[in-house]
Length: 190
Image 1: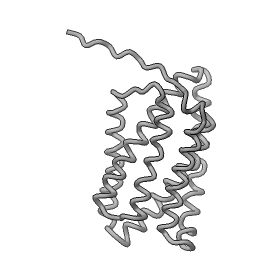
Image 2: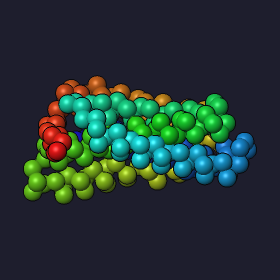
Image 3: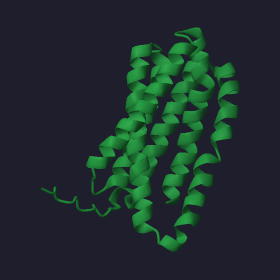
Image 4: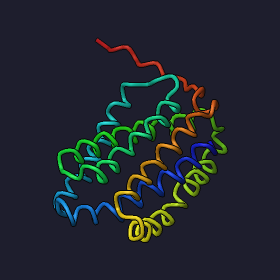
């Protein structure tokens, strides 16, 4: 649990800093705020599609796969840095949303199946604090860093943080090997 929470402290700081602070800046100098709204909406569509996929796809090592898929959330940030055009970003954000939803379902399922019910609320509390505590740090740092080093290098740095944190978490055997019980799908009636 702590490995994934540490991963998400870094991932959330880098992702939210890049998207919430630098995303609108890139939009202002390239494709405009109206298109930025469409791009962000594509992420929401990806989240919904990821949820629908999770209804059917139930891998045995869901947490490892989900943690690995978090690397995909670097794509929208790389797109902002290198190819800030609407069609590319719409696709990148949609795929990123799909990937993050796969992680979210795998994480919740893993916690619910491996943490005793009497401790689950406490674990979710630690998860929330640990995963979200660094977001303000990311939001505060990316602006000044972009002012000094430029927007593109900082966006690429944020993407690198996401990939590095995710690969580090994935390299942990306890994350990769954790299995979840795959519930039996009831046979169709009729």
